[in-house]
Image 1 (tube, rainbow, N blue to C red):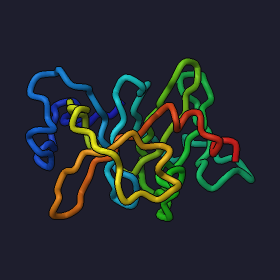
Image 2 (cartoon, rainbow, N blue to C red):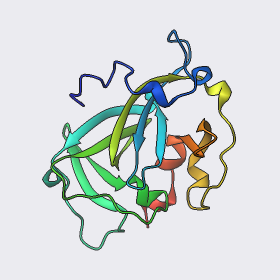
Image 3 (cartoon, helix red, strand yellow):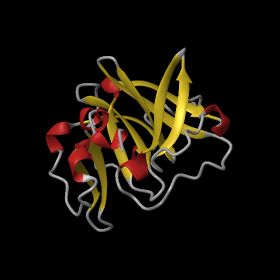
Length: 176
């Protein structure tokens, strides 16, 4: 688990517009994070099995595998694939695996679990999905994996994109 004290405290919400935040926990809880290109994404907490900060040597590389796959990880006795989420979504910027720790989000649906390596964990926030808008200015490689986006700053064109974990888990990109 992430050991940062502000992980569950809701810190870092100053970038959000007030109408996107839910004062009481009546919306949906989401994990916010960044990929190497500094785009911000979110996943619903209900589909997240675990969030880990791992030493890169805990991920075992697989020879001749797709460049988006960093390798495999033993998660409590179960071997799971770990992908560079940015590369999985079609971004050119690869995850820096030379740092001391890599953030991995283990997502699951039914009996399928995969790890998504990201650049940085942003925190947990209750977000109102009624304010979700259709995604705009997307590369075609990313579009199948998004449910929508929240506009954070119209001036800077900043948005928080909501990923569809079911589409990620069922993607044919895992086989390629």
